[in-house]
Length: 205
Image (cartoon, rainbow, N blue to C red; front, side, top):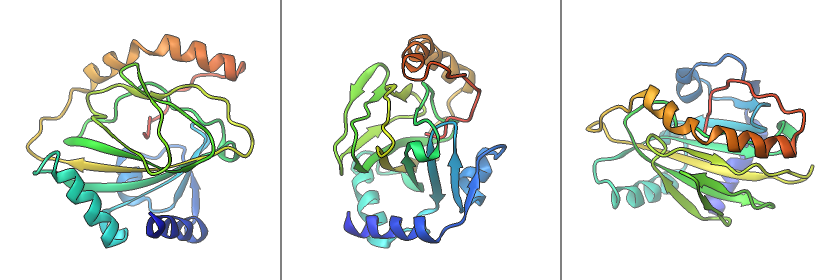
């Protein structure tokens, strides 16, 4: 992981920053190569194709993924740092926008706070260098509402693997399946952020 952390540090130092406002999915996952500041979810994020990342890291991730699905290919790798420096860290219940995604690697790179990941109401707590394999197209997922102190942070790598043989999920069915977790989530988030106002935003992971 040392090579990956070194690469991430260079990205943070040398990439320009833009604030997410009205970006489309294609821009976020295809054409915007800057660090994207998302104040709604309290993070800064950059998404790049695999050829922009160190070859040894991409090869290791690809080899591991093909033991789960021999027909999958890496679509993108995304780094995200969640921190109060960028807003209020949170992630609402959702499924990712429809694409032929076989699964996603959620890799916790570094952190100084426990922030449980919820998948279909089951809780997972990652340690640094842990990987959680998720079907983000068909499993509702979110982060358990947690109050961050000013110096808390969570650094994540998201690696998307697609399989062109898969059928696209139906977006309306995705939204309906995730919606059943909304009420409890908003009860919990209001305890942490009493003046929290829910806004409809792209759930970028």
